[in-house]
Every structure is written in structure tokens, then in C-alpha cells.
Image 1 (cartoon, rainbow over the protein chains, first blue to last red):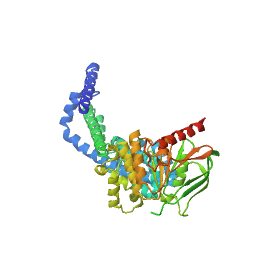
Image 2 (cartoon, chains in turn blue, brown):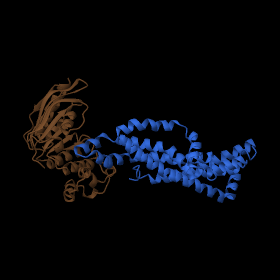
Image 3 (cartoon, rainbow over the protein chains, first blue to last red):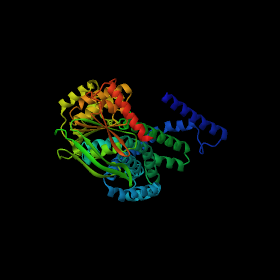
Image 4 (cartoon, one colour):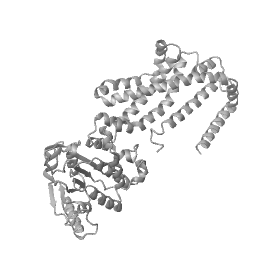
Length: 244
Length: 242
């Protein structure tokens, strides 16, 4: 049923796209139709695959690093009032800065290659991971804490045995959000300065008026993001308590 | 486990300067069930939480002491209306939670015996979500017994159960907790009449002791004297509101 509705939605979107192309009669370098994009995609499949691979590596490393950093930060915040007072406002401030504006700086600092894009992905997912996990850690049901107290548990033991497990569903929802955001971060990084990756390919194709190739790259990015989201969703199902 | 002591709480509590309960003295007899009966908001849960050493949000002046002079809060086991089972842990893990939290070795034999006594052998590896409300409270009771503490604090542990399961749980708890100093906080006159070896009605003005029926606990649900006591208790509760 789920697959069926996904297929139906895709066909519907393609139909609208084709209808706009047919009705407006726009030239193909402005708006190529689905058939042309599919053909271009097939002709350039190896080129697209190569760039997808680069973007995927950036996103996956970024996702891993961002999750680890976010988890560590959330634990520190939950553990120490001083950390909450000093670090939390900073965390919010970093979110108030447009990540786009930081991209040139990161390219300057970390170079043209992989790491400036990883850093972008990390920056963009760090906050959702940190804040969702932190919220979960601070919202342990009071009853569990009372029970642990009558059992003479140390704060450390309560953290490991109760607060962290109770916060895992929140961390899971943060990670699911992160899986959607991370590709955006990597692609912004590629736009600002790179010689590889789907973002680079999109920019290159656009610059040469190869709008069909740009669409093919963009749709590939979309499919990649959806697959990544589904994979993370699956991987975190146990954490979210769905598989039980 | 130290032998169960007598327990005395005397004092008064207020929230932001407004009195929650008037000066009162509650004494729990060693090795007996004391039922603290009262309506909502009279502070009976506060009394229990004070004995357990839990945060209450109320300012308490007075003292809580045991007849043997030893500290109280570290010798209590606590059971609430919510079973407080960890949803990610199995029945067996939940029963052994105390040892796990203190970093102690789990006494496997004792756990197995308790789980069997509660009739939960088949559910050892299940998660709480796979159990019924009654089964969950049996797991919570096993967890409470696993702690092997002389003082047991029960905060309306059976009030969310259906009538039949509640009566079953009352029997099981009365039998399993025999010989310990038990404080049962409840709003149910029937429960107090069935289980109380000492019954106290708590109102805003203080505590009123009430003569418990003569039969040994757990009393039969159709025991006449128990039913009369239930009626008398309900009457007392209603007078208080009027």
C-alpha cells in the first residue's frame, strides 16, 4: 500500500511536470520534460554516479561526525549546569547564523576538497541532533527518577541506565531530521567551491545551459536523500521503540 | 534486611506558605499494614514521599524517624500507581533494576523465585508493552520485593486496575509483603478496609484513626465487618467534604 501510494504520487508529479512543459511550450533549456531528463540521465549515468559517490561520502562522514559531536554535547549539557549556562546560548547563536554565509569561510579554512563539505554537513545537523537528544535527556519521566532514588542509584548510574535509554527515541527523531539536512549542507559546500560532487555537477550543467543534466543531477540528489532518510529511519527504528 | 521498625512522622507541611496539612503524627507499627485514606489533595502522597526521601515541593517541618534509630529513606521500597516499568527492558531486567542501578550483582535465584511466585515465568523475556495492566503491576511488585527492604511504601498501586484484578493484587501483595512495615496510601475505602491493620483517615484538619475489622488481612471481599468498615470510612470521607 505504501509502495503503491509512492508510485502513484510519483506518476502524478511526472504528469503535472509534463503538462506544464506541453502547455507552456517552454524551450528545453528553460524547462526540459521528464522524458528528456530521463534520457540525459541514462546517457550520463556514469558521470552522475561518480559525482553522487563523492557527495554520498561527504554526507555520510558528516552525518557520523555530527551525530557523535551532537551526542557528546547533549550529554555535557545535561550533566552540567555550567555547560548549560555557557554553551547553550552559543549553540542557539550558531543556528541564527546562515550556514550559507559560513561556506566560503570553511572553504578558505579547510580547502577545496572533501573536508569543507563535511564541515558544512556537520554544522547543519549538529544543532538538531544536540537539541533533540538534550531535550530527551531533560525530560525523563519523574516517576523513573523517583524510583531510582529510592533504589539509592548514583546520578551516573541514573544517566546510563535510565536517562539515556529514555532519551533514545528523541535522538532517533533528531537523526532522522539530520539525514534530510546533511545532503543540503554538503551541496551548499559544493556550490561555494569544489570540483566534484552533485552540487558541482548541477552548477556546471546550469552554467552551460545543460538544464536537462542539471535536472538529472538534482533528481538524483533527491532520490539519494530519500534513500538516506529511509535507511536512517530503519536504522533508528529500535532506538525509537518502533520495532518492539 | 534489618528487622522492620516502627516509623513515626510528625510535623506539618506547607506549599508557598499555605498549609498543605496541619500538624499531625502518623505512626506505622512495625511489620504491619497501615492504610492512609484520604481524598485528592489532602497531602497523603506528600506524607509518603517525605518518608521515601523524595522531592515534594512542600516545606516540611518536623521529623521522620524509625524506632531503631537507623536512617529511613535508604530502607524503603517504593511502588506507585504507575508501574514505572522501563519500556525498553525485559520483565527480568525490570525486576532486577535496583541491583543494576547500584552496580551490584543480581541474585539470579532470588529473582527467579520471585518471578515464579508472581506467576510470571512465561513472561521473563517479554517487554512491559506485551503485558496486561495486572501483569505489569505483578512485575512492579516483584521488583519491590526484590529490593528486600523492611519498609514498603505503596502509593495507590492498584487504583488503575479493574475490580477483579485489583482484588487479586491486594491478596498477592498482602501475602507477599507480610511482616514488613507497610504504608499504603489510597483513596479507596474498600482497599483500606481489606488491607489495613491500622487505618488512618487524612483530612485537611489532620488524622482520624479508625477501628479496623478483626479478621486477618487480606480480608475477604464479602466479610461483613469489612463491608461495614468500608461504609464507615466512606461516610467519614464524605463528612469531611461537606
